[in-house]
Image (cartoon, rainbow, N blue to C red; front, side, top):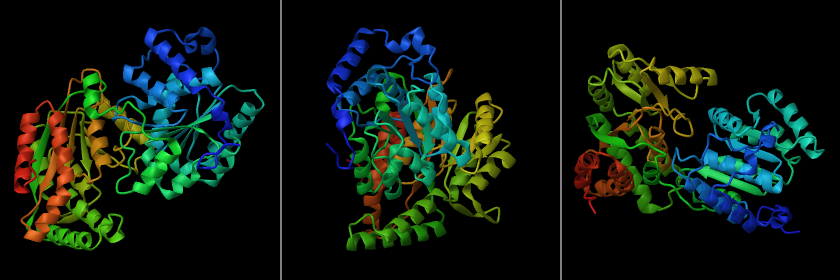
Length: 495
């Protein structure tokens, strides 16, 4: 018996001639031949994977399928938001069904709204997935029955979509032992599966593995990143950047407008104190996994995110844009002091300014919003009945609202994943959408003493690099870079 580092019996994988599969697929791709999935016979079988005639894989998507096959059924796709990772994954499942008799497709998502989105995409591929989330009674018996049907050959194919939280549950874990060897596991936004708890729940019995993420590397967690790559496999080409996606037409061009915001005197004092403490810890210990350091960085990020003057900048901006629509407002989870003599969350203050003070038709979109209400809000937003959505976090990963034309980012963490996800979110193509516009509120650090200034300079360097990179890709790059030049010059960060 041959086992990998996870104790998985890989005899089944060894029996597959992966190079032959890759060559055959490449021939179909190169010569544009019709695959078996296009036959009328396959369309009569409910629940087996079929590539719909309405979908034509792009060259880079086809190449990703070929390279995953050549990597012997393992690998991580690192591709920009909107590049069609879902389609690549389902194309791989389709090919495996026709070539090796794949029996089960298991898709794991971090959030419930992504489960619903995957369900819609799966249905386009002739699949009828079980949604394993919410109450156990809603899915457990059905999953048991269909796994039995697969085992006794009464059913050809089974698709299961679940959440990270359901995956680790005892109910779901007890079912994994019945998954056949010919199963494929897809980890959507797979960086979320690098935590100790989630990683321990990943099924070792399933050898065919595919991870999807625009940002598979976990922020300040090298061990978690290694865990993801060890389980799913290393990044396979082609990597697909934001620039690639725009060039290929997978994402639309954009205008980028940095808005520089000053801290209030009280905020500046707190900011300096936090930065000084961060510097002390870094001087004594270079380990970024230090819990005290993480806590200080989080407090500093929230202070920046909820800076009071961002509300004034928002009001000034939107007073000139009252007739616009399809605008997304990203808020932080912090609180704003002294706003209308109240102590309130930033999202509440932003909603008040937009709705009550400016008459801009908005609603909030948060983790507390039910799936039913989310869908209703999405439809109202797309129709223009709502001019804007005010959101926290839940729009960062995977949610597909391509009608977004403009985004106003009031709060960001220093996490590059959030930076990439948020900016990619507004660039998805949509009928009539020729370009997107992004307003990015960036806090200007206050005057600091020399030692603290050096700490700030080092902390700011990586974040500014991301801003500058994004500005360089914008249609108005010269204007955007000029705005950021002020901050670069102040902290001597011009290379």
